[in-house]
Length: 69
Image 1 (spheres, rainbow, N blue to C red):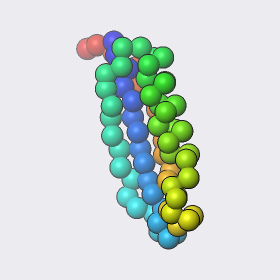
Image 2 (image 1 turned 30 degrees about the vertical axis):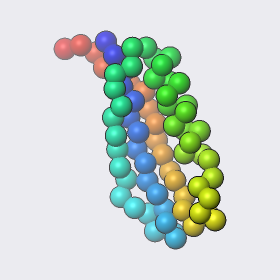
Image 3 (image 1 turned 90 degrees about the vertical axis):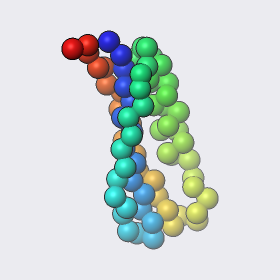
Image 4 (image 1 turned 180 degrees about the vertical axis):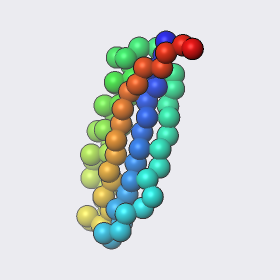
C-alpha cells in the first residue's frame, strides 16, 4: 500500500475565479510523510502572494491510501 497526495488549486484574480487544477503526487511510503508534504503545501497556499490582495489562492490538499489491487 502507498499514500498519494491530491492537490486541487484555484486562483481568484481580480474577483474572477480560474478553472481549478488538480495534481496527484505519489507515492509516499507512509501517512506521516504524506501529511508532512500536505502541511507544507497548505502553508504555502496560506502565505500572502504579494499581489496586493488582487489574487487569492484556494486549495484542497488530501492524503489518501491507495490499496494494492
